[in-house]
Image 1 (cartoon, helix red, strand yellow):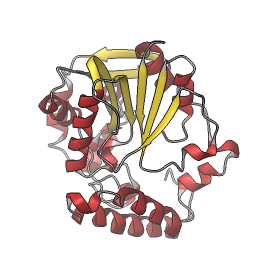
Image 2 (tube, helix red, strand yellow; image 1 turned 60 degrees about the vertical axis):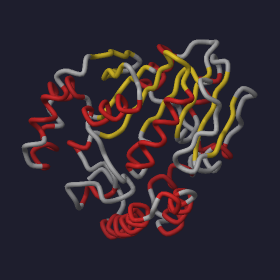
Image 3 (cartoon, one colour; image 1 turned 180 degrees about the vertical axis):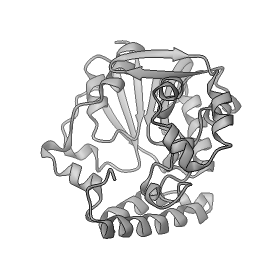
Length: 277
């Protein structure tokens, strides 16, 4: 178990999150507008032992960005660029980028995470209803999301990525990281189910994400892997073939295979896609 809480609390968390996820899954497009912040606020209120609440109790509520994330930014964001991040978490990565980018925009469903720390002059928060990104066309050079896509209803994920394509400059870069469905689920339902039933409303494979991005209009999609602050861009192959094979074995076998060094080298633990407009 990677969760230190008593089993009773884990079970309670699961039941509540599954209930809230069903509310989002069953809502229509209009109803989901504004529902995301309500659902997540209710989750934190009803699950006072939620792991993210324990993290927020750390002084200043802000840590250091992962070296993999910092390596991505060092490689792709230049001093004259406008950088946009969806779901900034504790804001540590966006603050790092603000030190050497012209402008930083973070997009979230509430301002709760940003209120905990001071932000520089070139840092801006914009609020979203879960899909719309109120930023002008062709105004962003690099967009980044990490563990965001899976939290959206599939229809909203598609709409949000159309927005990302719209706001990127021609030739702009979008870096997307999301859990790989084949090695999941990755939300609280991992302790109970073979498919995500919590607030990961849908998890994806490399093949599925690349197909979605191409349908939106991104002209290039490549996988990447990161080790420390080193980033390697890879061709899509052999991910589609490996994912096709993994689809045909049991969920327990896939989870066991996720620890194999060679498979992790070829696939990585997450879906990581670099898309160019």
